[in-house]
Image (cartoon, rainbow, N blue to C red; front, top):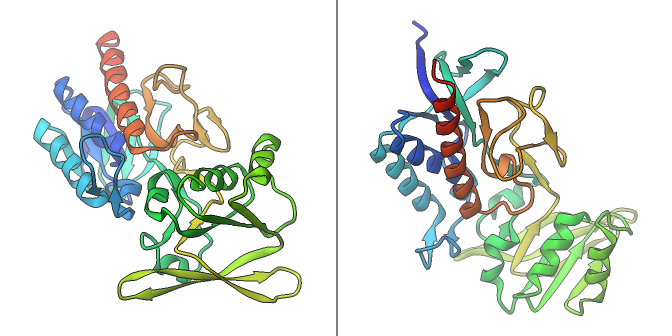
Length: 314
């Protein structure tokens, strides 16, 4: 029999934003329910070493997310392994349907569904994710000090990542399938002036080459888009920088969005365009996309929800 659960605060998503919201909402005695979603722990579960989480010189991404989950649970947050497939924001309490058949009703909702890096979809790319293939230069660039690396893409994301990676790499090769970049002119100027960056036009990634023992990338095969000629480039890291897609499927038709699908929040808060619906983390943040900023926004969302509920008590 399908079950209906009511909560003061429903948290949708289980990355740093969701779990931190769970900690704070629990401490506020709101007895939140957190529904983990399709990827419990979020993007950090696909990362190996994390060296920029305050308090940990180095921590494994999956271990950090387990600790966050345990912390939220210890504070009193109920964590459910379900996937929210629909959210009705036109009624109060809000109504969310779970893939399990459970219906969740909530006086306030915190959206922490995150974002997903866009990938090329190559089997070899998938095989080396976390072992030389990355979609986050600020997360993983540090591991390639003195190494040669390649960046795939031609927009702002790719150029920003290529420039950032010159802080560590001995050489960065930017591979783009056209002969012009889509990035802002000021970024392009900085890119072309940087002696560490070489641009390879009219090429696309065909295959990531690597070894299994120890597992790691040794190079890439790229194909000329016109001639089909294959070139092999040695490298230790491959950064796929073709953008991120916010996981906004539940609310893309009802909430105000910005920058290609990120949920808009009021400045200095996590309030969305619908009162009682809050957004935190990578779902709304197209700029920083860091675990620590997501956690901070999770805290903000729980405090915003607490204030909203106090003001709207029946």
